[in-house]
Image 1 (tube, rainbow, N blue to C red):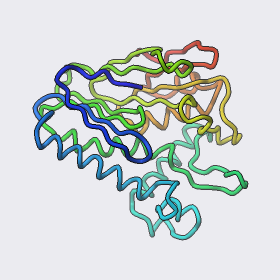
Image 2: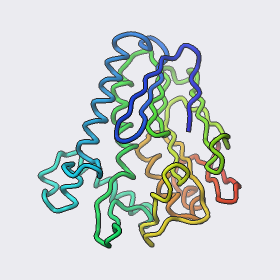
Image 3: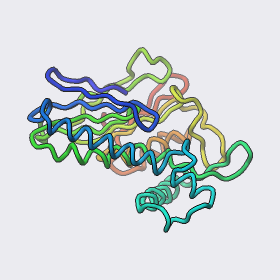
Image 4: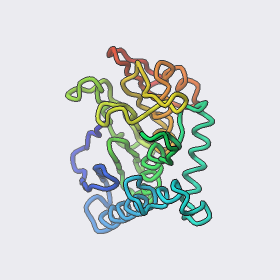
Amino acid sequence: MSAAVAPGAQRFVAHAMGMPISLALRGAHAEDSAGVRAWEDVLAQVVEVDRMFSTYRADSFVSRLGRGEVTIDGCPPEVAEVLDLGERAAERSDGAFSVWRDDRTGARRLDTDGIVKGWAIERAAAALRRLPDTDFCLSAGGDMVCHTALPAGQAWVVGIEDPLDAARLVATVRVRRGAVATSGSAHRGDHVVDARTGRPPTGVASVTVVADRLTWADIDATSSFARGPEAAAWLEQRPGRVGLVVWKDGSTTTIGRL
């Protein structure tokens, strides 16, 4: 996804958690030291989350927990918080979403990646919400938190990429205070599986969810995508959700009003 940045917005870009992190600021603190400090706070929080949760780091708490080297009590409280989200997501998705999966050897492996990105960016966005009279759009790997200081302020325009043709958009959505997340296989291949079968979903190309908070927008997008042919039917049952399902044949299903 991409956000259309209005004239006068200040942009910041960095790389963390193995993905691009970008910020657009408009308003009172778009170009002053307070805005820069908030951006630095965001990055510091994201780096700390990576230290705790990265599955690519052997010394992360999640890696050590998965190997049985530490217990939950020996981890920072954030780990228990994320695992609780994982349990709730598994229950709400009827088992399609899980933080546990079998690796290539058949061993069970703890993998919180399906939760951590959205949760971490929503959490880090608190530093930006504290900036008075300032709008922001914080994006991580295409998922984003959007905020306008005034409820009726100038909306951020978010483009939803066509998973079958990255050069075009399938839709745009205007967001003032909320979050947008997309799950699919276009950029990372078959990294999402239906935990009930252990296999990648079929029939669906991507799922985009618009919600109040990125944590659950991200979880629901992944849960819906994992269900394959059931993606739209499941997402329609989630209260207050708005979304777009793009199928492998190029057709789309809209949930709610984009």
